[in-house]
Image (cartoon, rainbow, N blue to C red; front, side, top):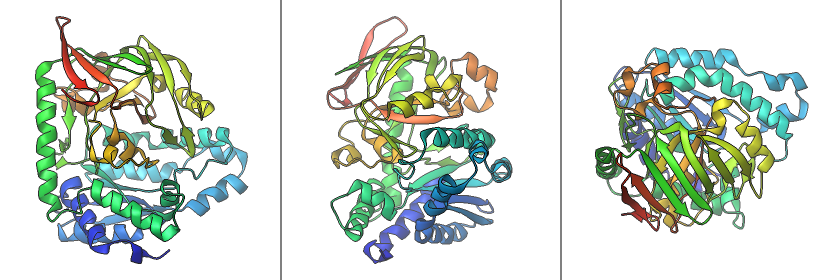
Length: 412
């Protein structure tokens, strides 16, 4: 496959949106990029726009699918309990010193599908532990950060298995460009308008001061208690360094922090979850006092249960997000096998770590204060989809009355 099937002008626009809207990169600010090796063309465009914006140093780290598989084929067993701590320590230090972070997604979602699940789980746990100091800088919005995607051939083949590789890459590229709004004449202006719409939704939800949300639909009767002093966000978010960034491109969600101990009932997934090379489908879980006490899936159940055993917070919620069923990504009808896209096709919840940003005056809160308000802590943060055109959502007010939020998957 050559890059000739990808519209380079639109790829350049995606890089510009990532730098100007995703990061709002500041003059003199360093930038750390992580990306699949296949995404070099996009990383080069990003680097150019970063330096044009006045960036300090731009440093890119690449991962390679072939060498990743070599580890599982040839590495010693004990190596799966280790991670490259010095690298993640360095990233944490970079973010502590004010560097921005940009992740290019696009890895093969099924890369580890045929590997030993226990080794995958052990390696993931070691990585999560090593990465936690850096991840906290990101999840707590200490810095401006952003994720965009590149149509990696190995990813495209899973989304479009019946097409040739070139045709699959082209079709995935076009889908990424459309969802990221870079197929429009002025993507930067389009994103500013979209952010304004999401801000209006967030403001309405914040004004309601709901204590919980009730989700009802096929296989779902779930009450998600909301954390004390929670705050809704969507689209552009101001990080603690004062920069207004768009963490996810694309994004269609407004989101907040649930109370880790006030989730009750049952919920069924509406789309498969692609996690660590395994497709987990038809997830069904039951919550008691905020914790998942029963979990099953028609596919990938063993992996799901290993995820829930990661740590105490892995079986509790760290995020709840609202996305209309008519979102452009949902309307595309595609399963992207990529959480960045699939979570923006439906309402979703996330297991694990909460965002401290989603509290009133969250930037000034300590970890203990966040925990006291109901915020969850974990090594993981894994989103999975629970919304569809058949799901209704009611907001419960402090006096117990109900307000229609979603009807049949759309804003009420």
